[in-house]
Amino acid sequence: MDNYTGLIFPSSSSSPPSSSSTCSLSINMSSSSTISHGLVSEMEVLNNNLNIGSPDPIRSSLGGSEMEDEVMKRSEGSDMKKKGAVKKVKKPRYAFQTRSQVDILDDGYRWRKYGQKAVKNNKFPRSYYRCTHQGCNVKKQVQRLTKDEGVVVTTYEGMHSHPIEKSSHDNFEHILAQMQIYTPSF
DNA sequence: CGGCTTTGACCTGCGC
DNA sequence: GCGCAGGTCAAAGCCG
Image (cartoon, rainbow, N blue to C red; front, side, top):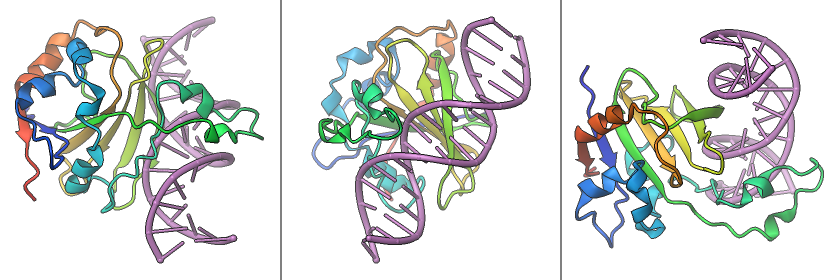
């Protein structure tokens, strides 16, 4: 099938993606460790441009940082008021569009679905996945666009701290090879 | 039997 | 303060 993959970049006003192709590769490949977290901290901007879910920029309520995965848990269901001690650290998020019949890109990592929500202004639900590798807190969201049902938007949050698990790695490289830089010109 | 998906409930942040 | 929308949890069920 024809599936193009448009990489969505954090189109911040200050730092245009100069060598974007290298950045794209770093999304999920094992070399991602070379990318500093500060590289993309403004996913909201591009999400806004995309109108993924709502006209608002994403509210970055995904405040989960690496450590408070436990903290975020409702402790006893009674007092989970420890958020005051938790400082919100925004993880960098990366999104890219894929024109595909299937929602899930086989990127070589193993994901476990932990939630699904209906999103406003979108007839397709958004699915939430977490990397199953122990100690790896990478999450991703998968959403199909209402206005173009063939387009799937995948948003990654965090960096994998481990190599790709499956050998289908080549598959993802193939996808990456077809990547086009998405330039939000609207 | 273990891992994964489904799904409703719960929590939080934000706008009004 | 209230309501809405997004994000997460966890129990139950399914499947290999």
